Length: 358
Image (cartoon, rainbow, N blue to C red; front, top):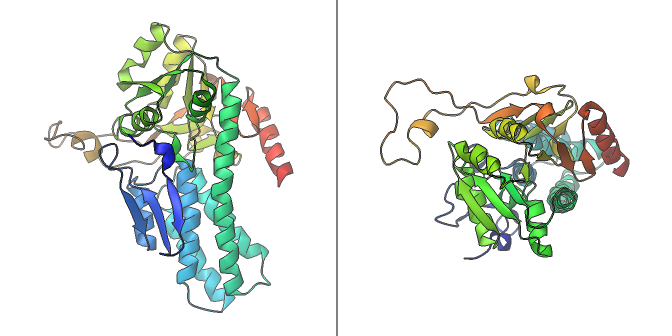
């Protein structure tokens, strides 16, 4: 099996003027590369989870907005900026919970605002360079998260993860899987338990696939089995990613994460959130303010089954994410270090380090 690390999750094909992604809805049975050339195709790829994971979505959006800029045929800056803003707002509407999406688009638009003396042609070059920089930074950020994460565990530990915050969710290494991949490089021989992650099975289809293809010892479990493996003493730490972190440390991640965290508290297993600073939203005070995306009921009742597995007409509640309260979290691992409670203070310090780097 070819390792997933040999593929690029998100790439810009400059010759084709296309965004190239791995179609994650086809995994693990088929590794299919999609070439997306229109804004509608990119929007649908983000919404339909063909590309997913907060960092990967951010990189895809940055490349997408650059491609949108190439399609704008005008030398008038005002017209160019207006059309570019419209394209940014359109892409931003595809996944409202993932803060990296809006973060990347705002960063791209800031390049335009900061260079009001440049021509439209020059602006297009600057947007290209910014999108490329966002991807390069994502790779470096994930590696640093992995390095900090490794300080929290020891060789031979059992780790548990939920959903997919891996290579497939980023440009490289992943966030929650970064300590696993770096541990693999160092011969740590981690044993990883991977929740299947209903209803879209990102853990079974994606995380189990990529960890296995990379040669990591991975065991797939159903979502309701986490308590069993923790009670057996097989798990020493939980690493998960996130889509948004509030200023108080409350975290939005894939539905079911908060259940894992509550169970981990019962069995004294630390839960670590792996979060690039781009996912930390200091303007959102608590998890109560995070908008939770609601998805189609068919994902629960019909998807993945040969036949419908619920009675017709039954009501379905299908939130894509849940909020893990900050008091269930042992630490938030960022590229600038590990934030600990009280998070209102430690996250402010982390973000100050980020600001000082700019």
